[in-house]
Length: 149
Image (tube, rainbow, N blue to C red; front, top):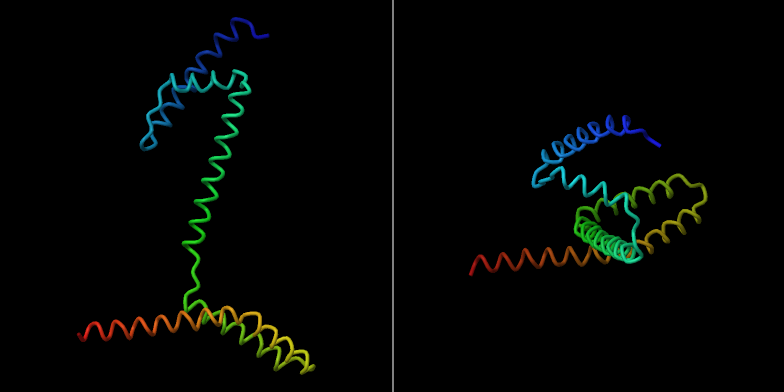
């Protein structure tokens, strides 16, 4: 149990720390923190949470988790795109790999079967590439005729 003398020496430390926290927090843009805010925060952590508080806190955590997932999903979906160039590079890499198998595997049947499976596996990307290329060609054709009219 702390004596009165130790609590009186602790008090200036707490006040200094609170002042430092307020000073550092207010250096951040769009933040206004007072010593009372820090005191309220410290007091709130010394009180036990009620069942209602815990339920509210859990709901808030779940809501934030859902929002975070939605944001992450949006960001990852907006950043990911298979462009014609990326698909072309991927196909070139696959072709190089298949060429290595074909040229270096002494078992021709094995390399032939593997290469056929690779081609079949990426056919969906080849279809996507063909579709994108057709759209790009159509877009260029449309813009050519629109500019002439």
